[in-house]
Length: 140
Image (cartoon, rainbow, N blue to C red; front, side):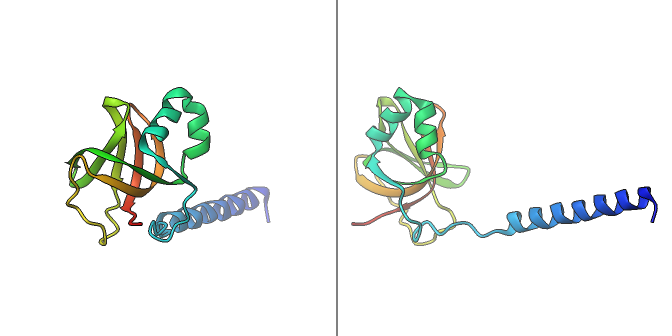
């Protein structure tokens, strides 16, 4: 077999492997948030304060982790058809945005401002508010 054929064969095998890995990752099921183990439990104001005081350290600690956050609802709204709960963070300006998990049908949707809740979510970092995704309500 010539060198060109060997190189072509190696490239084709590499491409097939890359396509297989991409297919697996694309179709990989998402973690069931109701069954996911909690990495951290804290109040929304404490979570916001950690990101506000040292974003790099908070990212290292919380990014991609499952966080159980408790706090008072500041606002509830819809964003692109998904319900979003904003918990108190730093006064009236900024807070902790909790995007409800659209894959979980068991959560309630009648949240009200001023209500205290506990949510289990995946932390995705901070923009102006701390952002948590795939949130479900935890009842104690």
